Amino acid sequence: MFFREALKSGGTLIAIDSRTNQTIGSSRFYGYDKEKSEIETGWTFLSRSHWYDTYNREMKQLMLRHAFRFVNSVILLVGPENLRSKRAVEKIGGVHVGSKPDAGGRDSFVYQITASSYKE
Image (cartoon, rainbow, N blue to C red; front, side):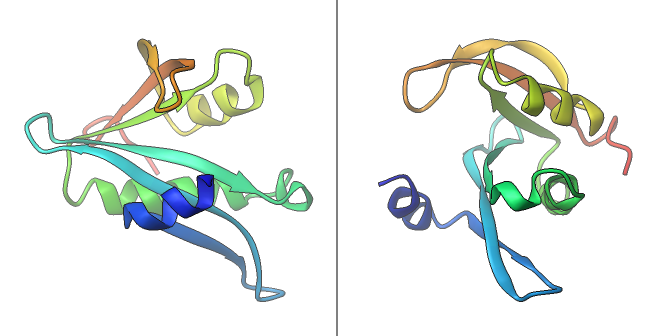
């Protein structure tokens, strides 16, 4: 159901390992807000075999560069217990700005990266 909804959203991206040409995960854009000039990115899944490489960081950087062509702010939601994701988001410049329920109703930390603060 998760992947069906992701594909239906029109903002889903597939991650392919260019060395093997194998699908290794996905990520997506969600919740575009024209008035705030903001979009959410994330919902990222990677094969466990690719967790400890540069794939997640590279995917996020590509998505941020693309998003900042159109919006001033990118939001990332992270589960409070997901320490790995919190560290990864902070490494790319995410700043914890609050919390809110995610699309599934679970409490999530809200991280924000602005175009003016983003450093590749």
